[in-house]
Length: 389
Image (cartoon, rainbow, N blue to C red; front, side, top):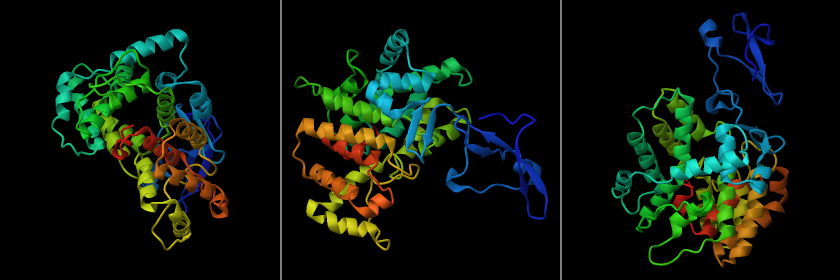
């Protein structure tokens, strides 16, 4: 957005009592209009009231742009559909963290740098031994990610851009290792160390599912599906977890402690837990025969039952991520040929909803959480690991 430097465009606000105040008008690169109210309270004693930031931009950003009306999601100006089709997590991470897609040389250097940070300190692994075997993986994630601040604190100056970039690369390199260790801990299995010869998604699958008793055969379709899921969820403007990290970071706290705070926010069912909620809903429906009754209940405003994974607060048309995820979901199910009643139920629910005038009229299409929840089920990940991923 443009800075408020005179001369600037202004809107006139009339306060109770007749006093008028000039409010600077800002416009972003897409032409959206914002009123700069930063000086409103200091100069007038009047505050704005906007729970949930529904009408408030909390910062300037060049990272992600959401056009909910037209169903667009851009990372640094690139449509998410193009990135998911032609890129991978290295491209995505380099784009989001450093502002541009990498050249061949930059890509190679970024891979080396991120791979170097996959291992975690052996003393950090001891933290996993202190959790109960049935602990929720997100509880483990919040605790262990926060503990990274004890290992990377001395000499860190968060006002230094190079220090912030190194912290970001460390998070990118280690977070899948920690998530996989949380998965192994929750299943009572031995921890599997990362392999430098595997790409981001392949290494993640390997660390979660490999066992020391037998070779692990990587499935390229499954790895690609996981990679697409991670790319589609890499950023989504100022959502709850991002805002939480920014608020924690505003006090100049250790970056890893801030990321742990964001992970705690992500844990909630109204945020990262939405994928998990989809699977719980499918389990509640139970069988294909129950779909008509459940759809009728979802339409009944007096009934508390809701179809999870349909519609989106921001997108007034189809979620662009859902288009990509739907194709990937069907490709994965066709490839794996899994006979799972819950997956069959999900596909039938999708068919019913997409042909029902009630959902079509209200643009309640299956969203990215619906399809990624199904993919997690097909990939064999425990329900409670979804938030970690």
